Image (cartoon, rainbow, N blue to C red; front, top):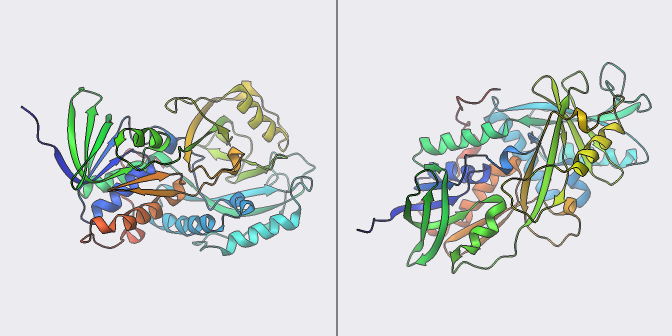
Length: 396
């Protein structure tokens, strides 16, 4: 005897930060929501970030002023709404004239201070890199630098907190549940999903499908009969390494490389330094990316250019890699592809390309604004003034 499909306003595919952010916002506006995630929440890209809430200082060089302005605004909001998950972090940018001239750095920091609210964070300034303070651990030839402020985040805790908030407002969050296929019905989509734990398959009738599957966003579109064709996402792998603490103090370093990229060296869990990230095109299975020896060497070399104590592959305690699903804007270099998000609309569906953990909340608002025509009784935006729910599993 056939089972009756489960009915819901939104079927969200993907349990990363964008999926749970949309689920929390939508359920708080009175919509019924089901979210399916094939693994655990935050199993992939959202747990492989640089653990930062930031405006993206380096994006200014690529002219992405809208993205930086929005990210700085969101940084201010999230610092206020999630103080247990997000804390201010001072960054030191040592100056090397052969990489970027001082006037360019000053101009970038001037814009960074003014494009969005600082939310109580201090303004940027020029500093002496004195040993024992901001110059701690650096080679003695680096005498001058700059400081600015951003924030550090428990990325997994942020995902869980949004999922808790969505559940508290009635959302049905199902992990270890895979989207199998979907086809159009009169007023939306009929999807087939499968429990990975029991093998049971069931149907879901959704008014709208939100494809927030991250690296699998293109694969999900391929499984939706009658969906609007989209260009495949640009998959880019970012890798990090963790080593023993490189310097004293609570500040982080942002290190300039001759290739124009920057590498972060961030205090991590008291006794470690988190170093990253790389940007490499990815064409393989996105489920289990791993750092390559070349990436490890790149990150070690980047740090060794600036720090007195050299590190090598033998000093790496652990590493992790994640796949970003970016909108293909045609740029030749992976590091130059836009980190801004694109929301691609189709009949009764929305696909999320790109995005940063910093801007997930605003992305959710934009997504629901695009879907308002399907839900005219949806209540107004609310998340900018609602503190994140506490995650009892999160350790600050």
